[in-house]
Length: 128
Image (cartoon, rainbow, N blue to C red; front, side, top):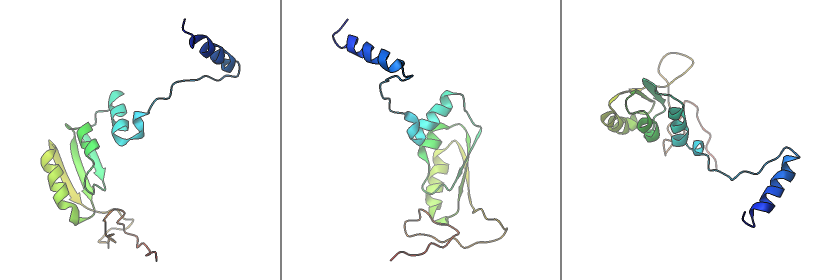
């Protein structure tokens, strides 16, 4: 037994009396989208169809995780069509739609932000 094993065991025994234990910290792979998707695959998720709403420039980890699924890419900004075309050409089976969700049918105005991220049906007040 090494000289560090005895103190470690004594501490563990002491903490056990209080219902506590010490474990080595592990980096949780599920803290990222890729890690979360890999965990889902590990427990058996294999969707036939993946729907990416608000594609923007794309969600590579989603597409890479399920390369054999049919991908429906939904994006409200026509400015992102080149990215949608790119992903459509990269994926086994994909189609995209330029559409936005709203509580009433018809056409809507989308307030496009300069960086396009966060663009919305809602008008954002400018900060001074």
